[in-house]
Each structure stands twice: as structure tokens, then as C-alpha cells.
Image (cartoon, rainbow over all chains, first blue to last red; front, side, top):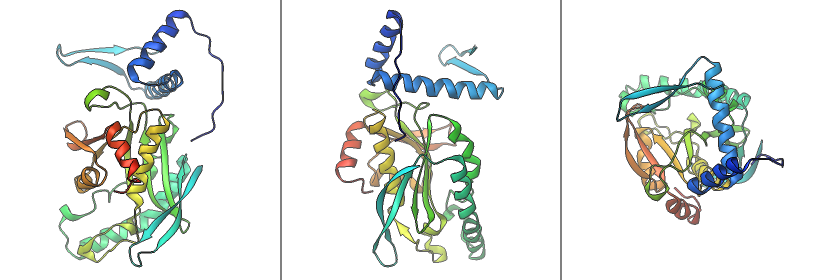
Length: 70
Length: 210
């Protein structure tokens, strides 16, 4: 495993509540949830910078919606 | 790169030899892998052609090119692992940790380590049709064991998923104890396999032998 550095993170109550919920739902530590979020955000950004688009698809309703990432 | 010392087995003598299991491969390492393996891949292809071996029996990763996979290592979610022995890459694996989720049982929707590519060096391939016995064994099973370990390290409880080439289906099901979960039309109709947290514990308890 690569060496890790420690940082302090300031979150609002609402943000912390979401982090707690995701941590519980995904059975991950809060650090692991944030690490996963960073990996996904980087991947999405790289693909958007390449000119690709991100979509959510509802298979039942056959609807597709583009997600705009800033 | 960091790594641990392991042993792999010579197929000809049965002796165990020292090797290194490395993680944190960089893009340049994958370029080097391809440079080392390319000539042997071509040789195998020539021998198969010359012997008139039917295409269905050709190694299904014969056309792979690790240098084309190198850019993937820019992503935080991708990790490259490799086994080095006698100063040569004997096997390589690329995993992903953020874009695939478990489909099995009560862990459905939870993250897992996805084995995107795993290949052993062409001189380690066993191809009886052209008299190739393979130089070393235990490389694929060691890399798979490392994927399970990575899953533990990530807090994924050993969960691992992958799409297997048809020639490797038996290895993953019988050797690694994974569960086949159907063919995937979005992945060239390859069979998707998953290792649950319970199967992972069993796999690690028996020392990762596949």
C-alpha cells in the first residue's frame, strides 16, 4: 500500500450526516468513503475533459439524463 | 513500487524459486512489460500457425497489449501489480476500486476490487499443441490472492469481481472459489465472476492456493 498522509476535514452537520449514512450503507470507514468519492470524481473529470458525457439511465422508463459536472 | 518476497514453482524441476510480488506499478512499467513479452507473443503465434492449431485453442490473451493499458494507471482507482523473477515480469494484473460494485447476496451494491486484466508472461503459457509446458506456475493464483488482499486493505472485506476469458473460467470457479453470475452483454458476453466476503475468507485461509 502507498504511504498515506493525514489531514483534518471540516464538514457541516449535513455533510457529516451524508458521510455517516454512506459509511453505514456501503460498510466502509468514513476515510474509505471519501477515498472512493475522490477516485470517482477524478475518473469522471478525466473522461469529461476527453469530451465524453456522463449519463444516468432509467432502464424501466427508458429515460436518459445527462449529468453536467463542473 | 513496494512489494513482498514470494516463491513461484518451476514447472520443469518442481523447485520453488524466489520472486517479488510488486504493487504500485507505473505506466512505464507496463511499457516495459509489453517490450519484454512482445517477441514471445509473436513466437507463440508463429508456432501455432505453423502447427495448424485451430484458433479456438489459441491463448485468448494473445492479442493483448499492456502498453495500451498503461494510461489507465493515471486513475486513482487503478493499481498495477506484477510478479518479477529472474529480472523479468512473469505476470501482471490491473485492478480497479471505484467503478464496480458487488452483485452477490447481502453485499449487493457495496464496493469491490475489480480485476480488469490479469495475464501471465507468454513463456509461462501451457500450450500442449505446440509442446509448450510453461516455465513457472503459481503466478496467476498469486496475483489473484493479491487482489483479495487489496480488497481487505481497502475495507471491501475481500470482495473481488471480474469478467473471465472462456479459457480461464474453470480457474476462477474451481481454483479460486468464485461464483459465476451470468454472461455480460456489455463485456463481450464474458462470464462475470464474484468472490463474496465469505468466499474470500475461505480463499485466504487456504493460503490463496488456486
